[in-house]
Image (cartoon, rainbow, N blue to C red; front, side, top):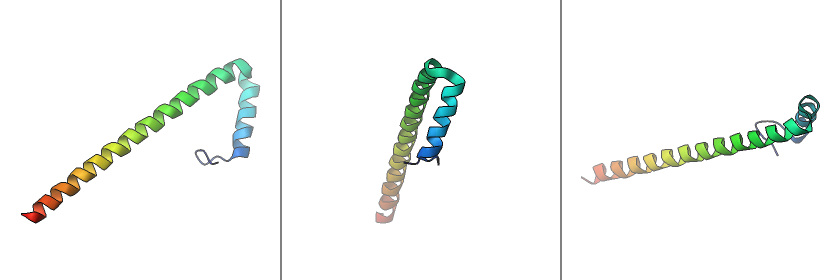
Length: 69
């Protein structure tokens, strides 16, 4: 498991430090907000990849049509 170049041990250390600074209540809210942010980011990334693939496919089909003429 490697999230953003951070291994499991480093992730554990980050959560422990965050727990010490934020406390259990704020850490829970922060974790939920962060999860929503990551989920939204991944959704936007997937939509961008889909859009790029659609445009590339359209461009390839246009090139094939020009070569047939």
